[in-house]
Image (cartoon, rainbow, N blue to C red; front, side, top):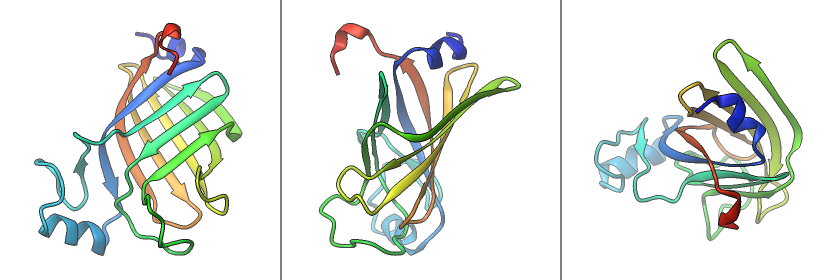
Length: 156
């Protein structure tokens, strides 16, 4: 599948398969407690069993990403510690660089309007992706996954 065709579609999904938190106390502790899937380490977490994705449908972006880093400020009593967003992104840009495409945008947290995320998504010719999420209140997370076109009839 050609990457330019994927990005020109207003209906695609990135299924995230691996997370790469900045090393911190949380990831080291969770590893010791055996909280991650097999094949994980403190710096590389297998996302099997998580519903981790970024979905683009028309002008709306929805994201559900697990978070394994450290919080610097903001509401630490959140019932959901993951990265969640849904809305129309701000400062959207997309460009082709050599054999891949890059997309950047800013979007607010779905539940807490004081937190926002800057996402940088790189899509390669084989539909593999890397995603970097920089938060206004947490450590940076990086993810890898696969991008697919969703059927317009799916309604999701």
